[in-house]
Image 1: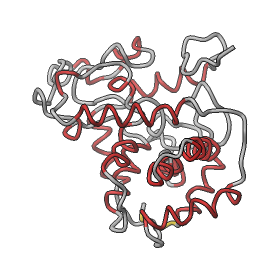
Image 2 (image 1 turned 135 degrees about the vertical axis):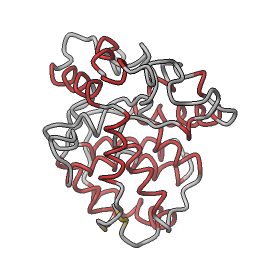
Image 3 (image 1 turned 135 degrees about the horizontal axis):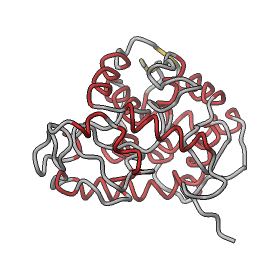
Length: 269
């Protein structure tokens, strides 16, 4: 029988997953996201890429209904599937690092939802803040808990945005995608192509790339983003399994690729 992924209504989905999304929807307001950007985008914590990867051995993503292995295993599974399909080396690297922003938990806290215990500010499907929450969000019944939805500045379809403004003009819920994207954007040795950076930034934006929401806000260039994300999504989602790897087993292959696109110096988080 073929495995079904992302079935949030399945009987065996944990209470923790549902509670995670309740907290995420309640707390992720425009004001919260602005504060997290100011707090975490400091670029003052140098860390080697492989040390960062190793730290994800200590994190299990509570929002994921499909996998309860340390997050580093999901990254390696994604990268290895992309490698097996002979996709470009930069895309293999993106598979390996796309969730690396979750190391935010090392300096996060329960109050921000950025700790091991409270992950609602770090993982899970993201949505646009500053405009109405769509029914394509996971557990849309929680949308009404968001304080911004009682504010007329934010609760319309376009909210604070202009029609056709494009994805890059939107502010998304705070999480590991945007964090890693901004960290790599600040990393002067980064030469990943635009497609790779888009895969990192938008891979958790399911209400858009899978739910079809926010059409009023999309710009002329966003169709190519959608194609890139849907291509990457095959490897992000459908490679999850119970097969595990040791980081050292795959490092010899991926290290030259990482140095090619990210250089050999520490990344500043």
